[in-house]
Length: 390
Ligand SMILES: Cc1cc2nc3c(=O)[nH]c(=O)nc-3n(C[C@H](O)[C@H](O)[C@H](O)COP(=O)(O)O)c2cc1C
Ligand SMILES: C=C(O[C@@H]1CC(C(=O)O)=C[C@@H](OP(=O)(O)O)[C@H]1O)C(=O)O
Image (cartoon, rainbow, N blue to C red; front, side, top):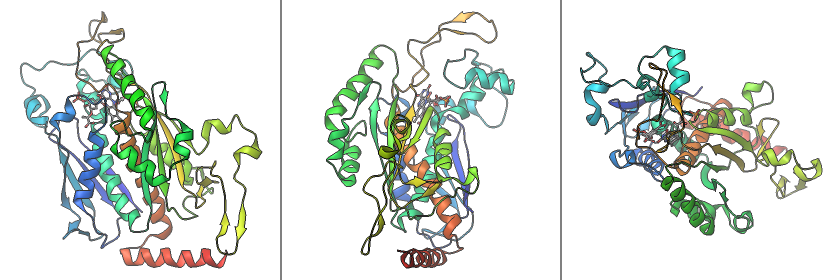
């Protein structure tokens, strides 16, 4: 069983994670992990904080000479901004005399609900962990899972399909191969594969920013090379679609997830939605469409897994919505705080790595072994079983 746990506050000394259950002798390239962390920090619309941070993973256990040893793997990612917060975020000691507690909750953030739930007198105790800063650890965890998947030719990419009202032209995307889409998205400041839409999307972000506003978006994650058979219909919590959706909804500001034709499938007739099954001796079973998005009955069906997630606009607004001070109960207009105007391109990278984790978990459940050699043996034996049926 593969599992992980993360810890860390946004302006505390560091973020950290422990991963347990990786097979021994899996090669881990720390530069690959750093590359994913770098990708998460990019994206048009990000705020000043991203200029302060240069996220880098520092492994502290579980790796020797770049290979896992079957023991828990742990790492930290330093918060460079901590030096600017020092005593105000010190894990030990007393609060400084000049500490200003936060009592003004931002609509759309965790502030009010969390302060009431945990009985906090300082909203900072909520926002530090609620902050999407910790998506850095999630990305690093996913980047490690991704290296396991790559050993079995499973790959992922993501691209933005909508920012505010501006969406990609699906006709344009249909003329491209997945490799082209991935390459174009990688080069785009908003991570979209449609160069025409890119201009409109950047303008939408600029317009929101100028108005002291924020804007959300939709990203798509595509996973290729997943064999038939990950996940199960046997119990709801074993369904691959449910696990992917749960993981993505676990990311800050993600408010909707769909697999394949998703919400659109509710508007279409069954004959349009479902993917006909064909057979040829050379190819075995195959489909010519993928409305199911690669998952049927909670099980991967061998097609590419296609997932979309919707991100709401960032809650911290330069022109804030009305809210009430938790102590005085008086209405206030919040003081201006630095913030992202749009973080959907960054969220796409988070989504991609978060999905990698879920696929790796399901993969290890099916083919799990204590060494990478054992996992490969299990995997290859299953491929032979599939071949016998085709
Ligand atoms: C990559 C990323 C960056 C974010 N940046 C900010 C930000 O700068 N300011 C902000 O108020 N919220 C930001 N958010 C969103 C908040 O973290 C999120 O809305 C908040 O934790 C409340 O959770 P909820 O939206 O899931 O209800 C960001 C989210 C992500 C995924
Ligand atoms: C730090 C990150 O994102 C942060 C997420 C975030 C929030 O409220 O979610 C608020 C902002 O934090 P700060 O107030 O320190 O600028 C973002 O910068 C990051 O992505 O690494």
